[in-house]
Length: 270
Image (cartoon, rainbow, N blue to C red):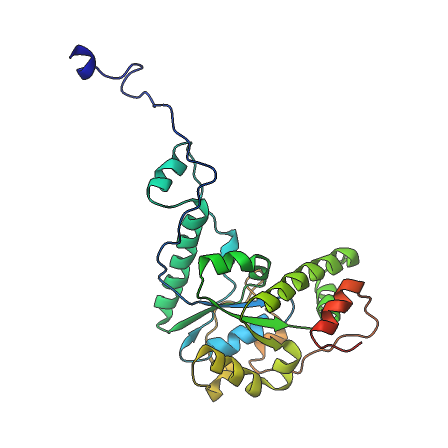
């Protein structure tokens, strides 16, 4: 009896030895507040900001600035935290998924609209995880000629590292090709979007199940939030409020053989 009612050895502040959760534990998906978000998958410098402003001008679609969900993490800061979360059928990845889902839900609720579109280009690099997080997500694959992407990146950067730029573009294009082949996505191109914005946006609206609205093309009359680096394009072209003619690929741009293969697979001539 004396031992039963005595305080634990080491005093009241003693911490019991933790039991670590199994490293192999994978939590089941939790219910989602936003069941079918829409993701624009593209390389950087491919017109995703233009597309998001056209979509955000629709009365039913919220397409905010780049949200960079993949950089939003949770930290299980104590040895026993993972075990505690496992008892709740959660692990680190699923906790992050729940947080990401809540961020989308908050933004959608604030907007008062029905659909949310996230156009953050680096999402392309993690599309399999987006699919795990939201099995019912929809995708718009936005392609642009790799040579034009390289030119745009080169012109944007001070003292550009040409080899690094080609490697960056190749990384995006490889993941885009994976997504194009493995997802039931709606595929459009930057060149078509800038040349025939009405036709392309009509196709996107049909894919999303909403009626096309003429006001989408005059996106300058809507509030799209702050335009600044890291949140999307902020150039004078995008600030014009109207779709401008797209810049085509320059013939002198040197492409690695794999980028040429991908460009040809996407229907671009050489």
